[in-house]
Amino acid sequence: DGGITQSPKYLFRKEGQNVTLSCEQNLNHDAMYWYRQDPGQGLRLIYYSQIVNDFQKGDIAEGYSVSREKKESFPLTVTSAQKNPTAFYLCASSKDRGKTGELFFGEGSRLTVL
Amino acid sequence: AQTVTQSQPEMSVQEAETVTLSCTYDTSESNYYLFWYKQPPSRQMILVIRQEAYKQQNATENRFSVNFQKAAKSFSLKISDSQLGDTAMYFCAFMKHNYGGSQGNLIFGKGTKLSVKP
Image 1: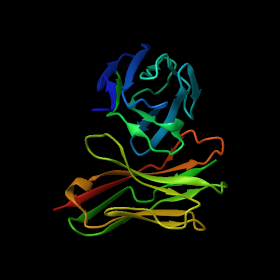
Image 2: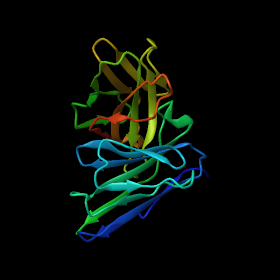
Image 3: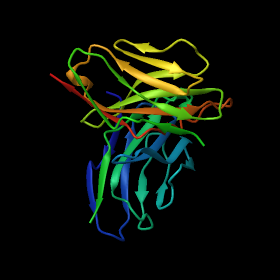
Image 4: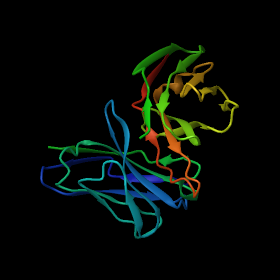
């Protein structure tokens, strides 16, 4: 079955450590996105990529980095520069570079900083 | 900048009844898209319904329909014959239309938690 796989589902990190969240899709979609979800805050866009080897900052990119070396993969690194990294992170993809606005989401990764 | 406001943090409805979730938005764009996304307790978010601003006809998908009032910048979701499986967070979202091809950058509201009670 086609879909988006995020791993790990739960992750704990000590302050000062970088951590990388994985996102893989087998939908052959061009565009991929990372959103952050906080309680009562909705979703906020961190980074997005429309094609391989290209990505753009979203609204809250500070303290995060991404890469897009393969069409199927869009990993997100939460760096120690991110001041409040504890959150739920959602990866999404869309076909046609997002023209329709229909996003397909993974099940998310919950990051907790101890 | 565009904003999306959902004024109802939580709602509940009895099974088989009808419920309406509110959403208002602010934009100076004339052409855009509006969406309702559903996030069930399993947390995988899915698209419920989509409306293109240039279309006057309200979108419908089975038991889900919208009331799109462009002048009032209002986009409410009506769920008819509510089912237990409708229990979820519902997010209203906005995307402006870029004539060179939209980028899929959605702006989400804060969500409404809907509980369907047996």
